[in-house]
Length: 542
Image 1 (spheres, rainbow, N blue to C red):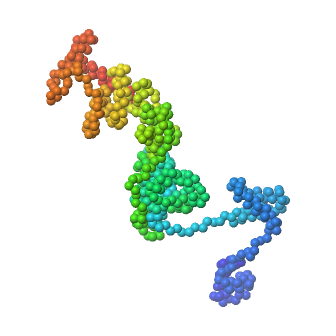
Image 2 (spheres, rainbow, N blue to C red):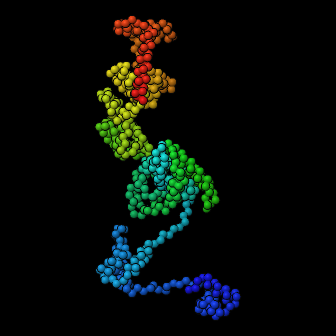
Image 3 (cartoon, rainbow, N blue to C red):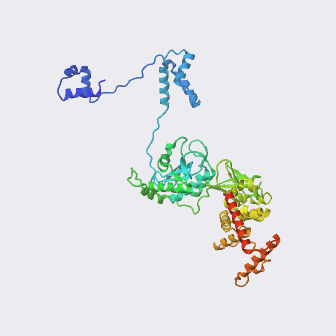
């Protein structure tokens, strides 16, 4: 067959320049028959076989090969016949005289014929009808540490509007919580949600489109009244829009790698990127994604009054260490509930421990192997085992706090063994106050060099009064031996009262020491001693 350039040259010489076919054949050194074909047709006819070439040696063995390849359909994928293995068996079992190449070519052709190339059709999604859901994965710098997070991605095929939200885990509580945020973002609920066979939703894949769904997903469907569509196994192309959304999240939203302090900051960044993408223009319609979303929004189903309770309930038993175990992480509860049965209400970022209908503890979710212990849960045990302040795991937070260390050392210095009891009594005030409020009151008292339980109670009382909170009852100072200081009338007193009290106190001390009272020198040495001790305790704590 002549090349196309020679074909075109022959036609030009004969039909344009008028050269005879005999002369053209002579000039170009081609057959006159080839010149005649070029004049009759504008392009050469491709060569095709009218019938398959005969394989006299292999043809008699093809039924044997076909039987082996048919059996391979039931065998594991990695234990099927290759062309070389078929040739080995033919030679060993049937004295095959042919070549390896002929066998391998036949086996390869059989398998290519069995694999039908997929055929696709363009899809047309009506507005407001479907949204596609999937999980993605990416790395961010979270509070200075490289952390792998999971990203809930959703995309509307009609408007191509995208929603992305980050979670520490891709489990069922996160899956449910993400739906609440998705519908809030859209201000409505599409008619149908499309998923692959993710573990958060599907318990078991049956034949065809049938699925055994997670009970909580069925409750979510009932709450928001949407339908579901599940893709065939290993057929991500059936929800290609959200697959592209996952890739865009990785390539655009997370590139360069975000550096954030917490998930809240990261999710604000992600939703800002989603809103920015609404300015992109759809090539098919020439409208922005935001304009197309405005067409869809009125077609969504309205939101119910209350969001879906995005949590999962699990039973748990509180052990003798006053902890419950979830996902191989231990969480503390108050010691009075030890060895009781409880329930865990698990949310996306935290969970609650319930005994009956009462919430007895709440924790942020930890990682496997961690111990999440709150020291206030174990404070009642200090009445019997005060030594736990030194070594028990729950009180590590107390030992590491400089302010509490100063307070404890001062109380022990001033009151001896009673100082430890007074320190424990101060810690027990957490039953009535939050840790932040109690610690702030202790810090103010330490700064003023007032080291006494009653002073801290007074500081807490003052703070509650200033904030308008109901005052908690507390024991007042016993002034029975100091009637001069008792409140009376307008509350105004003469300063001579304090001079008299100070003189009497110093007189008593000096008499017990066998010396002569000297008010000025007593005050100076006492103050210097106290300042030196406070400096020593502060340096030791730091």
